Image (cartoon, rainbow, N blue to C red; front, side, top):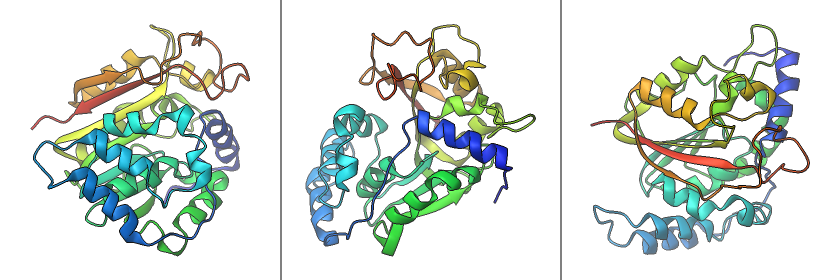
Length: 280
């Protein structure tokens, strides 16, 4: 487990708040068979080509979801995101920068009892989301979820063991510098780590706050944004192939030149979605 200074903890808290990290609250889980039945209905007889739209809809409608999470659905559009991620029942999923677990809950529902989810955060984030994580995982309510603490360039997973890796509102963090000489992961090594843990044919799905085209990597620190082209270049350099992109979180009214903390745009930034695949 990596240890961080007080300065890192303080700065990470600001990053978490600005990037709309996930809230959680305690709730007693209803019987597991309710969501399992939903997922079985969505997946049908598990054909080779899964119906990702139906699988996503079943996860969003899972009766075990917390009401506070549901209140964010209109803004965050989880059905579109989950369909785009192409995660399915029985899969091994690695969620980078899970925050308090808003997406973890959904991915857990999708993976089901035959799958697994790794809920990863940098160690320093626990000072700000630790209680939320504890509440979300309390009493084993997400039995297929494992928490992992690491920098982004030292992921806690075996080689070629993951079917889908997601990174929501996160790649810009690679250019965030909480203090002199402090980073959350070397960029090239971080993308290489994601490539390493994915199985051949596995998916790497990204959502992040858009910067203007050609913006330097430094805006990851100043504005908490990143140019889409930077993510594509880094992922392709690591060996990934860009398979698809989506504008379901696009906002043309966002100038992409102000910090994501700006009250005028916070919670409704222009965001891009990219899906990469590790070659077979």
